[in-house]
Length: 372
Image (cartoon, one colour):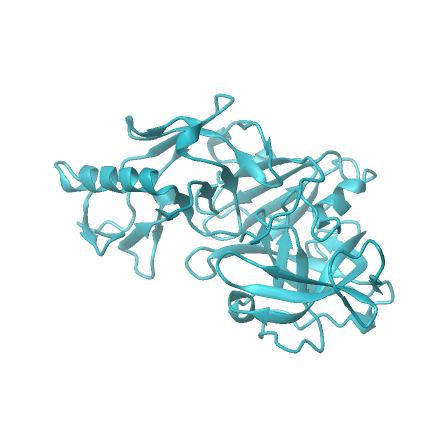
């Protein structure tokens, strides 16, 4: 998810996002003081949830709250008891009165939002039309659940008093914005974690995503979870207030679709957005190339169904005969997207649909969770 009004860049972080997790491997780890890495299990998938999420333990008597991991926004918040318009979610609303360490953030010169009964407030709208509003507070937070035994830090959090559209209907309680900019002058939860130099080594975090669930690590990455001894490739991070990268080429099985940084505009890595959105011209070329590859001999072993789906034939349930995509980035990194990365299985084992879409009049690119 991307906020409608991005803030200014306040802190520089390095981000590593990979989709090379070992499928089916448990993502459990217990914090060790020597590693300098805090880890938490990720839950969710594309078909059932359309996002990935993790747990936070909040307060002196820790209460569990589930939050979407979102590199496209910066606010970390969830519903509290007494919310006037909040949906029913996985976990109960946070009971702030039960936490002795919770403190409302009072109105002051540092309160960039409005005030309500002496407490700083926030309102955040997102590009797909959903919104949240609430009250700022600080409390003790642990990343993950009790099994991970991660140390607690003081963090700035949002207490929702109103949820609209997707925030109201989603199963997960809230959202954990991880973009590298402050929200209404408040530090993000990542900034609070990175301040904890006693336990966290560096300004690096990683998300390793599998078809179901995965792992979030703060302070580094853990190569033992990479498939087939995959090697890390580093891509320069642009200082845009988001995790912005510079693609230089998109190709399908050796056939160039687009080239040059200008073809892609500003490219954001957004784990809170499901699909990848390309500028209209890039999308049209990619769509046409895929249709051409699959409707001429020898084909892809599938027939087209609707505008953006394919029905597997011959008893196949995976798109193994579809051509791979390749994206090159400034700095020399080259990423291979296999067919099951740019296609996703929709409700039926033999029906696979495009995980990329047209960004309309927007000339920029959003790399969503299916392709990161």
